[in-house]
Image 1 (cartoon, rainbow, N blue to C red):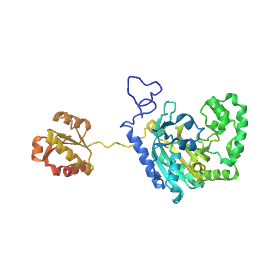
Image 2 (image 1 turned 90 degrees about the vertical axis):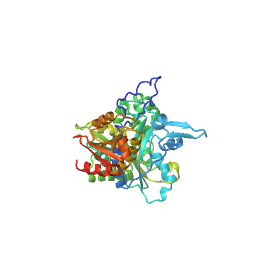
Image 3 (image 1 turned 30 degrees about the vertical axis):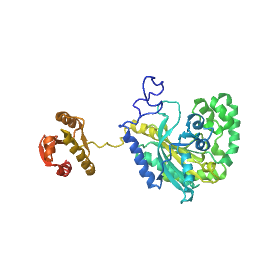
Image 4 (image 1 turned 180 degrees about the horizontal axis):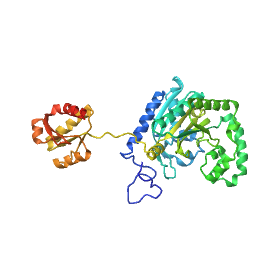
Length: 437
């Protein structure tokens, strides 16, 4: 991620820069991404989730239908384009509709259910650039298709929780709510609209429009004045049908059995149209219990697959925001792991020595010994100064004479002692020396 979040100003016209809200992942940040992917892959695979990588570009209709035409994502944030053939494509703003499409298209409905998948990669949303919010960012996703049992969403919450714990993020709270299904939510919407209309003059312009087309989305508004109004609204959890009530009760009982910390949030609805029943977020807390922001969000979406086919397939899933997780890791000084440092330096003089050195590096790679070099330098003293800076234990020196005799000088960089060995013996000799360190 960028060292400074300076994305709010216009890009200078005389410079070629990364697009606004997008950034280079620099070498020093790569270990964080690798750590999150590696930890997520290991834990998810243990719980039976298999990796899938959908295309970055999908049919625009997929997200309009799946994510929802009245969502913030579809209305304002999608990067869409027309192909030369006239097709309308969109860079994925999220993974879930793509995986629902893959589940159907690849015939996964005929596999033993539930089908559990995980994904990792970039997503794209044309959001207002601000600190911690990017237009290209990364998500780690878990999805399960083909089970309506509450244990499945509990498993997804549990796996995400364990991934965050394994990354060293210990202070976490799970926020939960149930938004019911289409049958029981109809009456609640009437109550909600009746309440909101009394406060309509105080709603933001977006929520005034949502009141007519999708009033539940007002519960997800980030405007402070709308948040205050929502706090007094009827709670959806009090208007669940018996089946949805019992489902959510079972979810909470399972979480209690697992000893996971959670709290009920009656205003939590998530910002996507496809959610039904359980919705959740996993939030990082500081030492004083103050909430720092959501790291993972998701829920059940039993009606999503039916939008693309006549098949009714219960499903649930969630997504972790990788950049948000990295920000917390950095803030808490959670090291993603040491990057291996070279212990050997290869110094060479002349073309023959350079070719021999290049061949030799492959032998060291196969032996698992990390070697540094400066092929572009001819000065031996400059190369050895570089070896000193890297704090390697040994330097291998191949000059023109050594190249002609098929020999290599091994210099101990601590005491300066030198020995000569045959080229085909040097890897074995270094292995012995490094074991003694």
